[in-house]
Image 1 (cartoon, helix red, strand yellow):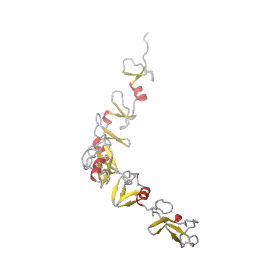
Image 2 (tube, rainbow, N blue to C red):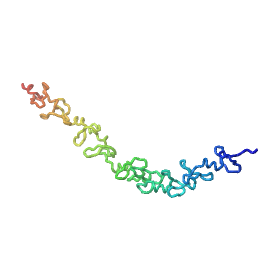
Image 3 (cartoon, rainbow, N blue to C red):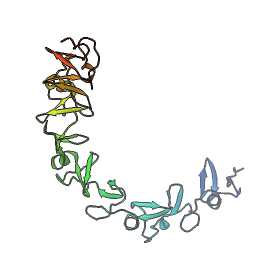
Image 4 (cartoon, rainbow, N blue to C red):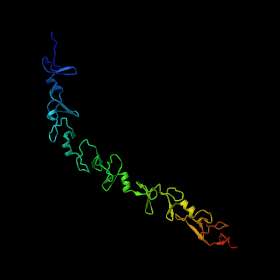
Length: 279
């Protein structure tokens, strides 16, 4: 007795008929298409066994239905782009959605590398330094007056030059006597310690930290022999080419403060009236 060979779904005999195997089970064409055939996104009809099934992101089309949403040209074996579930040929997509290059004003085609900055776009080969005309690519750049410069060209053309080292000042900097300095170059003339952010003074246009200025140029207190800077509101007494800190202007014998008082002198000593009455 001959063994039966039936459709796995409708159980009709498949002898002499076209059939399709799925997971080792045979199906007649009608059952297979009803159960497993994909539905075309364009026409809504099943994609039969005798048709090519073109798919993109879990969506399916007949070969004849796989076309541009705008111009209806075939997309088979052609590049395309998707926008809001619509498939578009590159020409239609570019016309509708692609940005224009800020430099050459031509469309930046889908899949083309581009550079973006402040809501503007460039072809990679059009995004160049205005001075040297070399592509900037992923290198750092500095915009100025709606033009872009690579860092070396910007420094050569626009950056201030430090009066000390003659190199460009790219960030920060210090201005002294209307001249620019790097912070690390603006130092005390004597000890070479940085003066940026510190109190300092000058002599003959050269900057000094307060310590060096006092050691080199300030007069010494006749009482404690320490320098009298005269800076920052320091109070001092001056008498006969000698100077004292206010706290040091005291009677030589009794140490009474003589600030605002009368006093007498004996040789180089300063005395209060009581201690000097026997002179």
